[in-house]
Image (tube, rainbow, N blue to C red):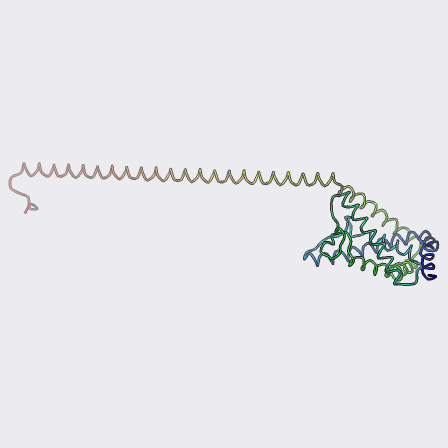
Length: 275
């Protein structure tokens, strides 16, 4: 009982970590960006292997999954004073699961789109959460509290405050611009407009293709008909010419025979060739 009470008291003793968070806010911004990038790399690799092709993950345009950065810092703030990794695993996994379900529900209702789906796993809840993912988040919570955040903070403390502040400002500005652009792009109105434009373009392309195909077919048919007509005309003319030549030959032969007969009738005797 005393251990549970101590754990609960320690759990809500956030003064030290909050003080560190405020004091080193620029470092926290960079830590958030680094862990978010790491989460994006992890999800992209995993989903690409599962899908069998490259699959970009995340709500933002850039290579980042902010839920990992937010989750790591939130777990560190809330559970950073707990020294028992098992307790951090249980509570961190539970908190991350609640955050994931709430985030998934919000994104689906707001943007009419699913950014992740655990339907293939057993005991999933509406495809938004599952025990397997909760276990991963629990392990991630332990790693964040005892390794990631403290180690990154120690490393960043090596650099000057000015350098860290400039980098943090640039990172925060990029995240702000990316978030605004992603919200506008993924909004229902924008999606509907893009889908409608794409559908309209597809219909126009299909219609143009059909028209072009019909014109080509009609032109080919017309050319074929003209070629057939020309061939028939040429054949008819050639046949007529042949008949005319044949008739002329017959007439000439008849005239020659008549002339020969007349000569025979007028001359006495016979021609040598008559024998």
